[in-house]
Length: 209
Image 1 (cartoon, rainbow, N blue to C red):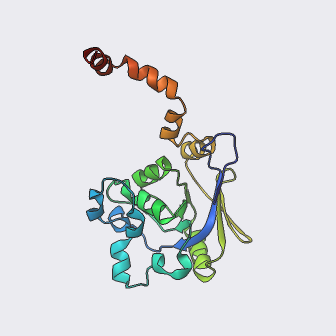
Image 2 (cartoon, one colour):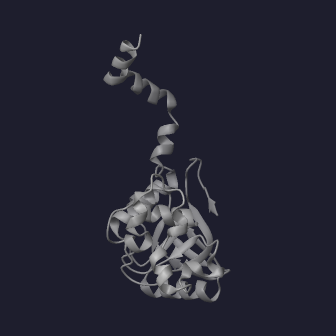
Image 3 (tube, rainbow, N blue to C red):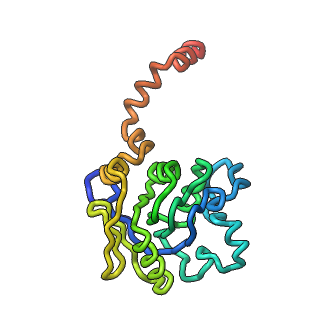
């Protein structure tokens, strides 16, 4: 679940839910969503293919295939997660699987930016804290992991970890400006006014009379 703590309609100040740990450094976007799925017209249905090749190779032992992980909303990863290509399909597939927030040791820059663009906060913890958090959700899958952007902390039970997130990204979540499309659609009159001034629109209107 996510809670909005400000008046901005799209503000994200806290995300919480059960966690799922995917261990391993340098997990690239091709592993998150294999390239063959990039031919899709929309992102619909990508969730079921998240980590598909890794899951096949693990023959049912992958974290995303564990019964206890179904419905988890917080992904916990290691270092340089989301490296490789810049495909936005990677965070899109995770979001459609059910992920609403990610905690890791570090993230590839473009992957991080693509997550911000769709409202998925990515918080950074120290390696020792990540290991403790991964072990916790693996041994206690019903534990609730809470990401608080205002205090920049990750909490599970009685354990609380100080997290890092770039100021610009954090502020965009808190004030709701991460959602560029949402902001645009809040001003339909201004959109229409600009549309009516576009030369190709004006020309089309004139020729259609």
